[in-house]
Length: 224
Image 1 (tube, rainbow, N blue to C red):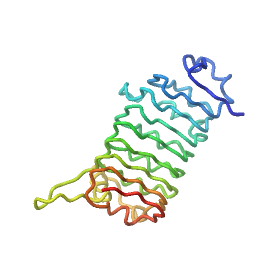
Image 2: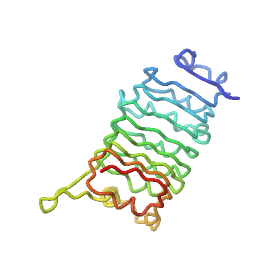
Image 3: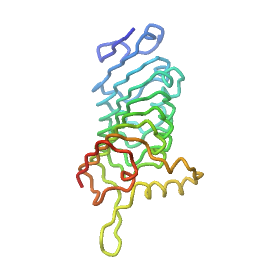
Image 4: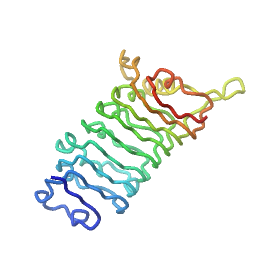
């Protein structure tokens, strides 16, 4: 059974009795001025969740993400849209969404991603466009099933050498994070994902990141 939830549904205001909502598999709450979800929300066995255009970035705390800690939603959610929420950071427990196939976090204010994003081994589509990302975490290379990656409109870091601008590869930038967090080196980092579509247009990059040269790409859109 597929259930639909919108701003006219009582669940958008009250969540005292979860039993009547257990058959929901698709929840759409875009543009509903939502700042957080109750922890019990994660007990729903949802497959698709659309929270785009809300105010999750308004509150700077981890309480609003406790619903991701529930086993039910961790094992059923396959598509999550949290775009247009003015998010400045993602919770580390997003890496516990074990069966996620599509993740849309475009049009936010993210400057970095949690290392745990590399734990979503089922991920096939990742939209990071229109954020403030300076680099990608090295763990993103563990996403072996990732087919679509959109990182356009992000101000990736550049540095000046010998009076000329030179862009560090995403691998080099990510290596700094590995050292910072003292992660143990692994041969897994030597093997990139088989991304068939990558979009990196409209960035401040001056050269193509070396990471892309190692990917098994079928389609790539690059505008430097």
